[in-house]
Length: 251
Ligand SMILES: Nc1ncnc2c1ncn2[C@@H]1O[C@H](COP(=O)(O)OP(=O)(O)OP(=O)(O)O)[C@@H](O)[C@H]1O
Ligand SMILES: [Mg+2]
Image (cartoon, rainbow, N blue to C red; front, side, top):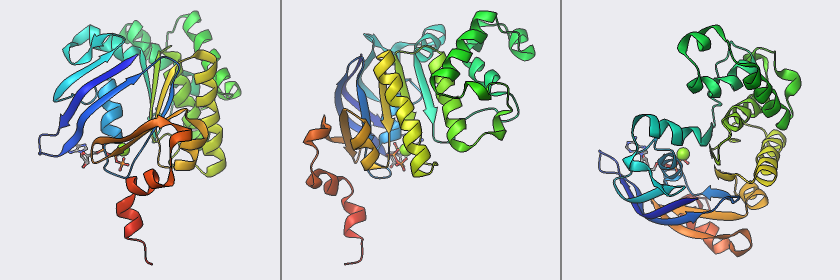
């Protein structure tokens, strides 16, 4: 469970990233975060695993106040939160399997990681993660030989391989064509449904957000503008979120 109470993020340059955020996200929810560029979507997602520190308020993950965590405890929290980025963030010249295995690295010594000496159970786990996202046949291929959609699946498998309760994704399909984007969204949906993980996705494509998520959180100027089920979203809400861009359209 993720609980935000009056969370504010003020960047050192004075920009308000988040303003008075109150939210509770429970196990098994599939949440899409939408909003115009600069609204605060990435900031919101990055506070959940402590990549961005909050300025005030309370943010608890599974009952633990994350701003108080340091060192090993913070690493343990991050281990429980998988993250997928728009640009995949994979190591290009190593195999797909080794990329997925890298999420197991915190459990090993540096020498084991350097030489790729992973325990058999870890390798089997990584292969299972690849199987879940439908690219088991790519396990021994060099990662940079894969298409964008396949690479994003590797990234998803790596996140999944941490066995997290929570999966965060910042614009995971923004770089993909519409068909591939849907395939990757199908994987998120499957993982959410079968493994009951919290999935939180920042997404520019409103149609995809409405099609895949159960709950939509719309952010405007760092504040929550709408929070509710997909069925409650209206055109007025969508117009308002993107108002700057719609008013600048030629009439
Ligand atoms: N490290 C930073 N330092 C200062 N300001 C920042 C920093 N990161 C983000 N901001 C500012 O905070 C606001 C929210 O940014 P954020 O990246 O969260 O928006 P976003 O909704 O993810 O936008 P996009 O859709 O373009 O990715 C913006 O005004 C941005 O310029
Ligand atoms: Mg962003």
